[in-house]
Amino acid sequence: MRSSRRLYKKSIFILAVRSVSVPVRFLLNWLGAFLYGAVVMGAFSITRFFLDILVVVAGLGGDKVMIRFLAHSSIDKNKFRKMFSALFVLYAFTAFLFATFVFFSSGIIASIYQKMWLVPFLKLTAITLPFLVLLIFVNQAFKAINKPLIATIIETTAYNALVLFFITIFAFYIKGHYKIFGFHIGFWFGTLSVFVIALWILHKNLNYRFLSIKDGINYWLGKSGKDNIQKFLRVALPIFIISVSYLYLMNIDRIFLPKFVDGTNLGVYYIAGRVAGLLQIIGIGLLAITPAIIVKKLKRRGQKSAINFIFRMSLLAFILSLFALGVLILVVPFLLSLFGQVYGSALSYINYMLIGTLIFNIGIIAGQGVVLLDKQNLLMKNLLLGVVVATISGWFLTSHFGIIGGVWLFILAQAIISISNWLALLSGHGAIG
Image (cartoon, rainbow, N blue to C red; front, side):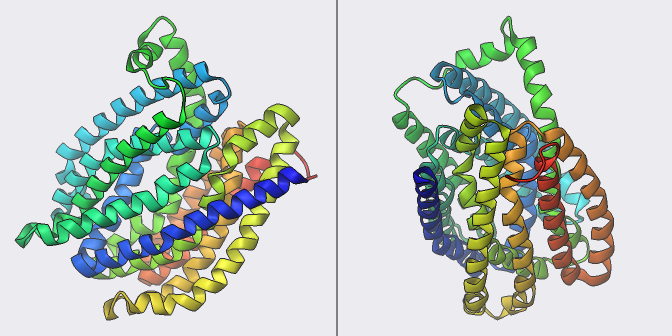
């Protein structure tokens, strides 16, 4: 009973800390729209989605693979050091590889969208990639060693504040035609700064040497390298497919809409999504707490105890989301008024998009549980079926209904993700006890 109370208090505290970042995140989007305009925000909508894809691909499954290996090795210092070093080397190599490829093929990528003005934005995105991948990796390490507060501060308040600082500086420092690139340059500088700070904080929190580049290279290329690669791929490949499916479904509206919507309206839709996304603070905030506890419960009391914990945390996410939803519905008109008249139409999208975000919060912890409990194969099958359904629906909805179709597609995709997560988690387990 005491442990449950401590957990809930910790959850509320983490959410309170995360909520501090809301004004900073809002200010970041508002200043971006105010200083750079809707077209630049539309460009960032496309390049940020592309960057999210690259993070998953270069990260060989992204944060889900990272937390899966780090959380299971965090109990023993030597194992953690060995795994952290190996993964750090791997992700540094793959991220640099993909960044180089994207930088030199940005023209081809832009031609797919039939928007060649995206080329310089894509090049800046490629430069950002290695630092963002390694930042996400270091942040998963904090979650694995049960330091969710540090992870939350780094990925929310610190990150948004530094990006905000740099995009504001570059808005006034860069003059003339090149000013439109200030938002993306500021994003790169902010990412690099937070990565260096996060690595330094991890060093201060662990009282032992946790990174050895030599050991990391030896893990993959040494005598046991072949076995280590096979072991890694056996676990990582299904999670990689899951992560790509998640990413596709989470951004499917942004994939189809650029084909049917101009840059300005795309920028308005992007702001609508960012405002509705404020509700994700609940689900993502609780997600920072759960990995280490799920693994601990699994090892000490078995799968049933871990699933019961996931169920309780998801219920907490639902209750807190309902409260936050009511608050957001009241304040959204005021928030949008700060962006200016051109963004006024976003109000009609946001209220519906909040429903999709609520559905997201209900299923996000279950998705993490699936990976930590090694049930990823069934989830992979569920999501691949969902991708087919969403793709067919996406083409129909966006081609016939434009932005409104994108909103309904967003809701459908969130429902597919949550249902897939829970079906996989509860498979072969029975009712929640």
